[in-house]
Length: 329
Image 1 (spheres, rainbow, N blue to C red):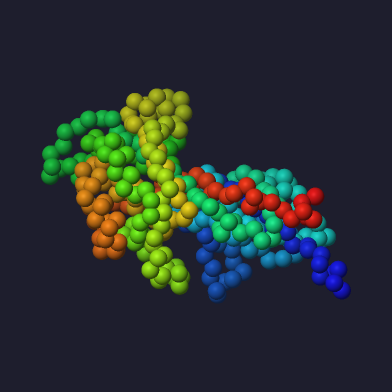
Image 2 (cartoon, rainbow, N blue to C red):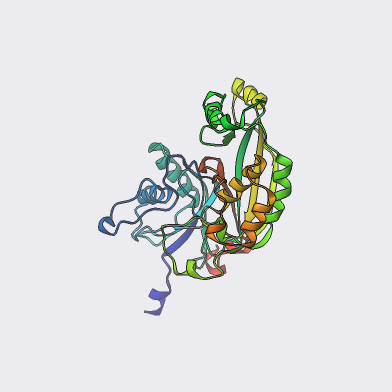
């Protein structure tokens, strides 16, 4: 009796994934209690769970996400863990898991790629064992110099966005700015204001999902470890690459922290872009950080669109993936 209960037939797997988020409502599936058996194929999570069905595990497939991304946000690297149990109790070959999942996703024309799969201990949790996350925001700033009258500036910039050259390869992959009065040095200097521990209540959008932890006064206190702003490059090809380089300066804004609030990265980037275009000044940023309140948000700031945002990496300690000695063979 004891030996029967000591046999472990359920195994946990970590999926390292990437995806283009344009067509998805987000990574997280929506559960409709009235239609529990129906999979949400408008989410990355729902599509992964549908693809995992091809292995026919005897247990119910329930994936767990390390990070949540909104509609239109992309991921170069994210992680998901899942428990799978075979009829014979053996482990699935991780290379076969990766290949079959990618073939299944490709057949459905889904822009999701499993980078690799690995066995992990059944105590491993992809979210709680993560020690950090790095996001990248891509912008392209027009080099074209034009003089606009103050009363015509807003409408002229909107028109210019539709008249300007945009490389089709980067459609919904980068945020293109047509404002020629863009001060990147001011952005780099101001980004240092966000480094360290702050109450980011001003920089959190209200989520429809309720959680008891969100009511805790310390919930919005977060630490940003790094913000790096570097010259980027176009992802366009052929003649489009030449035109893109001639017409735009590309910049990569990279932000690293253990965790982020809902839309925090997009609000920080939107704030820095508003500063670069002189819609706000450094004092406004200081006030939003030192008076943490939803009413402190400066409405001259536009939240940066989702298309330019990428989850770059979910970070773990190397020891997080160690298997117990008796199961590592």
